[in-house]
Amino acid sequence: MKGESFLSFPKLRGWRLCRRGRWRALKSQILAASLTCTVLFVYACTQDLLQSPMHFSLLWGTSSQPTQVTLLIWYEPFGKRRRLGDCHVLFNVTGCHLTTNRSLYQESDAILFHHRDIGDFGDFPFEKRLPSQKWIWMNFESPSHSPWLSSLGGIFNWTMSYRVDSDVFVPYGYLFSRKRSKIIIPRKKNLVAWVISNWNEDHERVQYYNQLREYIDIDIFGRYGMDLKQDNIVKTVSEYKFYLAFENSLHTDYITEKLWRNAFKSSAVPIVMGPSRYNYEMFIPRNSFIHVDDFSSPRKLAMYLKFLDKNMHMYRRYFTWKKRYDVHVTSFWDEHYCTACETIKAAGSQHRTMTDLAGWFES
Ligand SMILES: *[C@@H]1O[C@H](CO)[C@@H](O)[C@H](O)[C@H]1NC(C)=O
Ligand SMILES: *[C@@H]1O[C@H](CO)[C@@H](O)[C@H](O)[C@H]1NC(C)=O
Ligand SMILES: *[C@@H]1O[C@H](CO)[C@@H](O)[C@H](O)[C@H]1NC(C)=O
Image 1 (cartoon, rainbow, N blue to C red):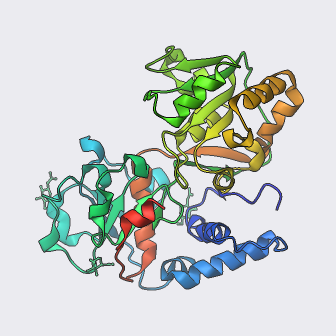
Image 2: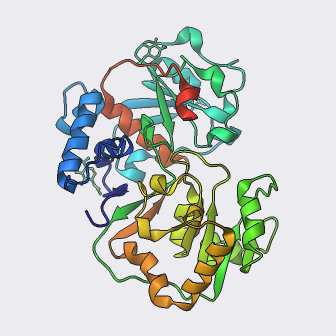
Image 3: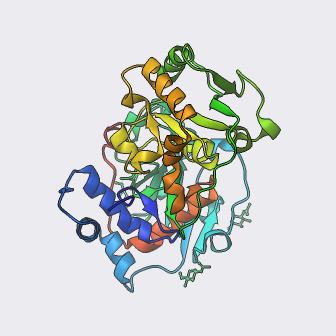
């Protein structure tokens, strides 16, 4: 299963849902060392099908699938108005009607509630609620930055987040397979870069940085450092060999654009701080990144980076994935809405309520 044991997607929607099962299987450590990839895949998919009629209808097709779905976006995320995209034009997802017009409540199949905008439930349509409607809780912040979670039990039917086990799973990015090609790495003039906009001395990432910089030069960009070249992160970071892809908080599956865009798109080797290495390896190949936990101290990490700086052959090995994969960085918010729509279309009509939302999301 060389290079295949992580969460990559063929750029074909639908497969994604089945592949999710594989992740659940991996996560629950059903993975027996002797299983071949194919067996694992079939097994995991079957598990998924047993657990969820949704995937069954997706794979085999049933006449109960709605062909047209209306998705009402109750809050425009962070109060910002935007034009909604056309799912067919953008992602080849047909039969999807996105709207923010609350007058269409009665005819909506699902209502999307963005966590950060919920407030005191003052404008929640509780009394108009139809039993067949799916209320979807949507959140792409980590638990550390998601207040009032504990008041949300028993309200929503579905979850939508970066967590693999969400009902609508939308990661911040992913690798997708493509035709074999040559590895191209831009010329590197510099060593380590970090773009940071939220500087907090209490954050683990800042404390780690403060130690690391004693042993190796790190260029800081953003509000507290240098300006980005042409205001462009990828252009700037492409000139660096390494990138500090440090998350603002450490949680299951919480791997953001800091990895996918800032590091991978820039062809800089990510030095990650976030969930465990084991968790990262569900998303990306094990030899594509450096985890701070791989080293017993920032000093040892610095020594290793200096070693790689002098050893081009070893450095280039971190890009082996580029032979067969490319990076997709998820774009907010059309891709999220269209993925939700697609999942609703495939879901059938089973009923469900998230009773312990906080317990799940914080786990
Ligand atoms: C769009 O989706 C349809 C079926 O859902 C498929 O047959 C077609 O090839 C897709 N087109 C593109 C450009 O991917
Ligand atoms: C919202 O939908 C209602 C009912 O279809 C329609 O009368 C109204 O013009 C729509 N409002 C907007 C802002 O599009
Ligand atoms: C959604 O949750 C509500 C509240 O628990 C429940 O009454 C309703 O049947 C659920 N609907 C679906 C489609 O799951």
